[in-house]
Amino acid sequence: MPKQVTCLWFDGQAEQAAQHYTSIFPNSSIGEITRYGPDMPPPMKEGDVLTASFTLDGQEYVGLNGGPLFSFTEAISFQIMCADQEEADHYWTRLTEGGEESQCGWLKDKFGVSWQVTPTEMLRLLNDPDAGRAQRATQAMLQMRRIDLSEIRRAADSGGEPH
Figure 1 (cartoon, one colour):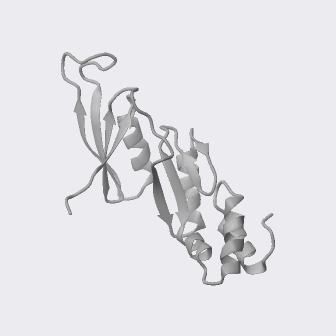
Figure 2 (cartoon, rainbow, N blue to C red):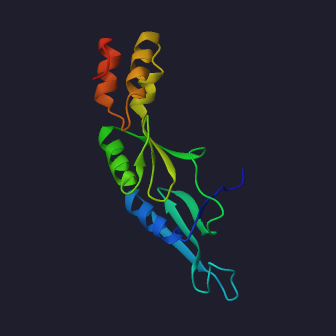
Figure 3 (spheres, rainbow, N blue to C red):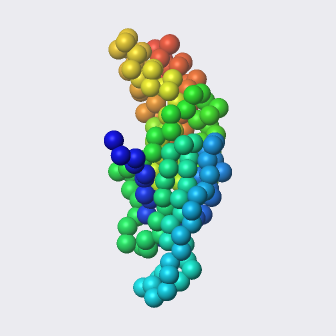
């Protein structure tokens, strides 16, 4: 399969987004920055950033400053598979800075990009072979914005309602 690179359309914030994301994810870097040439249609002007290439923990992205024509929606999100609560809290905290929380571990960052902060243990609990445990875990998760693994575990194990 050919290499795939995700391109994100920004309205003048591609370089700032690349800087922000590479400060959050390990093993990340900013690559090539290209700039608009002469005779650009407004609002672009010569010298403005056209694209900012960056890598987040081995995955390549390109931020494109294409103007205000398109914006991000929750129809596409990036899922971050987290090893534990500490890692999930790190991504949740950093990505909600200037952004907004949603439900069930979803958030929109300050650039409007949607993310799902997903502890892998939560997925195991939601898919537990014991249907009752899975249902209790799911009901607990549905009440949350930021995922709280201890609460999901408690609900799954006790059969009680989440606090």
